Image 1: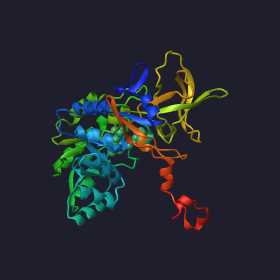
Image 2: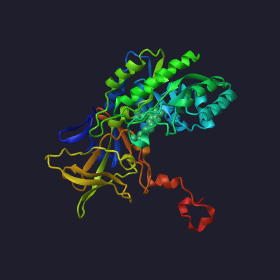
Image 3: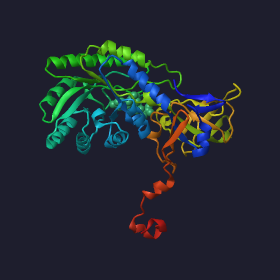
Image 4: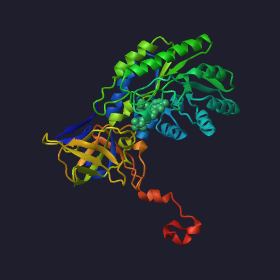
Length: 428
Ligand code: LLP
């Protein structure tokens, strides 16, 4: 459930008509709903009530500091994958003591930065990484709290680009090597093995792969304990899917019930790293129709948003519902191809999608764009990074300003040997 509904014929974010925001700030722009963020976080937390849990919101899904700050006010910790994300979470008021650091390629500098900040836990994904962390932590005279991420070789049955728990994926320690790595880790200086981590993919729409992976992890924890490991945390990752189209993902309550069934008596803290489930349906991308181009055998709805603003359809063939901001007065729909202005055919949001009659100048909104939307945008084709606006009831605020071509030019330089070509304003 989200808080983007038609009020008096106008698609609104909570109490704010999107048309008013489009007039004030131009298009395209992202718009997030506080009430939806709060609802999703609360529903997820409630589904796990009764368990000893830590919720580390996966910052990669939406890293806007106002979104992070909203989640921080609800008690969320963070799951980060870079020092950049650590800075964002600290700026938003999420303490490092509630933050786990994931990722397969942490550098020594990143480890040092995270340890200096007092990171709660590092999820380590290889023996090679453990060796570097051991050196960094011992050099600093600190002990790094480590969860070892294992790869359970379970098919999450999601898009191949966002599956992470198969043995062919780069993530986690291969199942057959896991116990050996735990054993090696315990004799490494500067390393305290606090737990086991697992994450098998994103946009999971079935509980069965979760159950299979979690059961393997539970059994691994039991074996590790017989070997004398003091396992204090099991990090169960994120990945719960959301309904973009016709999917029917498990509800947080169903997920929570499965977790309780499999992990209820594990006797330690359970960590979670939800991203999409919290922010996905809490955001829309609002854009204007530039042209309705009548082709030979199809009609193209050409928008002012493009693949650089929302890359998911081009990258994962992802479906995003596209709705008219002015509530359609008739039920008549006709198929159109919904495209952006970028110069490649991949800049296509939907093919032969049934849409109401629209004209140049009309506004449409991409739903479910709160996760992996703005964070994955780029300036390709000399296009701005678009503003992000957070709504809270009838209040709203620009929480990320437009990043313009002038900002892009400011960070570029013409080298000396091209001096004669240097424009005046770039010299000096
Ligand atoms: N934890 C780890 C270790 C992860 O790698 C991820 C996502 C998450 C948590 C959060 O997963 P979520 O709850 O959001 O599914 N850009 C892609 C999704 C990439 C997901 C990467 N890892 C997309 O737009 O579908």
